[in-house]
Image 1 (tube, rainbow, N blue to C red):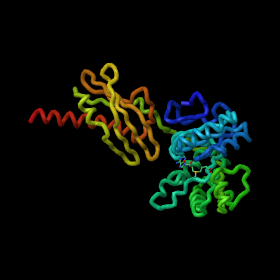
Image 2 (image 1 turned 135 degrees about the vertical axis):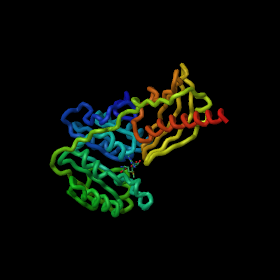
Image 3 (image 1 turned 90 degrees about the horizontal axis):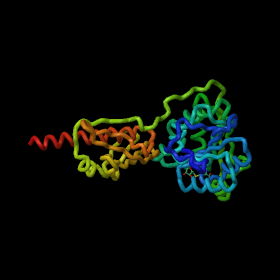
Image 4 (image 1 turned 120 degrees about the vertical axis):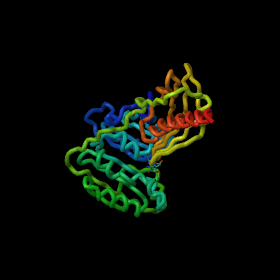
Length: 323
Ligand SMILES: C[S@@+](CC[C@H](N)C(=O)[O-])C[C@H]1O[C@@H](n2cnc3c(N)ncnc32)[C@H](O)[C@@H]1O
């Protein structure tokens, strides 16, 4: 959903995917900043380029609100903010060849080897950057950690569609970020790498995530739903890279039971409600129309797991009756 504030796109509200990146400013160049912190860089960039469209993705809600207030105060109408994990947002929400440039200023380097998977630049990052940039577009990373700058430089330049255009130490920059000022005041060096996407045709991506609204599961038979759901609270499940937990349940009208679920695919979390309704021959389980999670593996896992648990419980009860 684009909120009434109109510049904060809080996923996973109702918003079709992939996102419409130009936000109706047809023909404008579109840019993205990953991990915008207090939003100072975005604010200045967008203020100086009123015809461009600027997106920011940030994991911290506190940062999102700080940046939002900054952008409101300046009266900027060309900045759009998303709260979420940039790795998920890039992969699942951004259309191919839609961005002129991507900036990443001082990402957390996660220096320990055991945390290396948490680096924004890990995994499929280079492939996603290469996909979302238009031919000729750029990706720019600035860091105070030389080893990390070099790691990103080497990883990204080994992608066949990205070429290293610049590697600079202490580059002059017209807009500096909060962290940049901090590191420079401490006498640290700043390392910048800039990559260009090669000219060529655009590989379109299909199969963006849909919503889970369409998934319905039927469990045949009649059940004591109250007793079953009462035992569900706090139970968890997982699939590769995804997990979920069932939380409180509520009785809604007409015998509909609502079950609160929190599901996480990597660092991407969604909270939603499943509903279970006892019908003539079966129990119908589906996502409540009040929530609209993306159909990620964890969300699918939670729906199937609820049905499976109900089935197992019914089998146990019928065995108990036979004994
Ligand atoms: C060291 S701060 C830099 C902030 C700002 N760019 C600056 O230079 O002042 C790194 C920021 O990246 C954000 N971040 C870390 N991992 C992220 C991810 N996977 N997706 C989006 N933001 C992320 C953090 O919440 C934090 O605000």
